Each structure stands twice: as C-alpha cells, then as structure tokens.
Length: 119
Image (cartoon, rainbow, N blue to C red; front, side, top):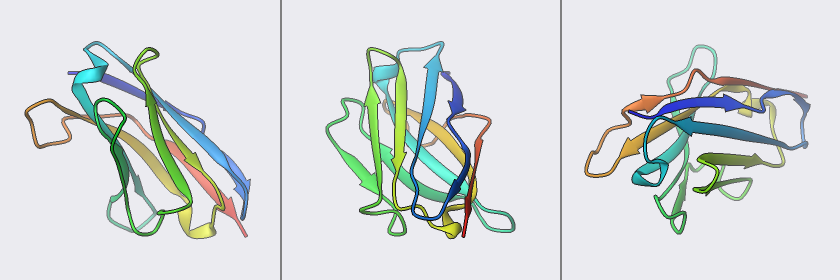
C-alpha cells in the first residue's frame, strides 16, 4: 500500500486560492489512480476530483468543476489540487486517496488537511 501525506491547507478569504499537495511513498506511484475527497463538519465525505495514472484523464465533482484542477507529477510522487475562486462552502478537511491498478476501491488515504474559507 502507498502512504499518503497531505499539505497546503489553511485559512483563505472567499475568492482566494490554495494549492494542496499529497506526497506518496512506499509503492509505485504511477500504478495508482489518485483522488481528492473532502468532508465538511456534519456532512458525508464528498468526491472532489481524480486523475488517472498517467495524468491524462481527470474527473471532477459538480461543485468544484471549473474552479479546481487536479494534477500529478509521477517523477515527484505527488498529486496536487489547485483551488481557485474558493467559497465558504469549500471549507472542509481534504483527503488524498489512492486506488491501485486493477482494484476498484480507494485503498489508501492520507490524514487530511484542513481548508477554511472565510466570507
């Protein structure tokens, strides 16, 4: 299993930007589809975005489409989430997740990084 460590969270004003990073170790990073999820207080975990093993294909949740961009650097074993035009409703703990080749589950999760957007 791959180990994941997120960073880059913090406090930002509405309309601002942040970039989250997720560093992977312990396995072949390029064999994993990567994703970001988030969980706001009192709400269920929500899919934010995913990126294919090569980085050529991405997918986004409806609430972030057009504002967030997921990318990965396989040479650095890192996946990123660039967040623009942030809204107070983007406030959540953001988690990085990995799904290994030939599996259909998110088998590895990071510890999460907090993002707070003030109005």
